[in-house]
Image (cartoon, rainbow, N blue to C red; front, side, top):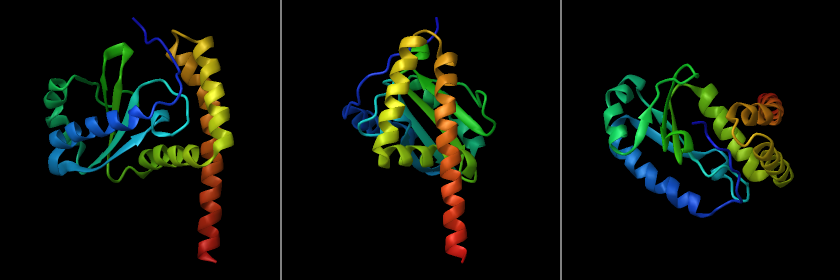
Length: 179
């Protein structure tokens, strides 16, 4: 069965769900865990989202993460390894109708860590773009209710343009600071 795509209005309870899950994750990863972040659309107040809590974790060692995979299954997660992104460990809870997903990166993977945080922060601080993104996601969910690839492809153009803008802004800041 494939994932059914539903986009709903922002729910402030998503923060609590993230916090509850982050405690479980920190317990499993212990001193390997450096930081845990609420990412994705559920981390952006006011943004419509699929009701799936996205969590990003930075760790000292991915090898140590592999060793505790069984502990994640004990709290309901399916451990899927890299799952299409080199250097990531991906876990999901709830199967095809998932309710949480975890993206774990080693602390020196600034490309992946940075892009997740940059997009989240941009959406949190740019209301017009947040509204535009919400409308797009609602439209895509209607158009592709059972096609996660179609839904994702539809979002990709919007996200790609915003990430390019963020990279240009960062380069401009770097040049300005160095002057």
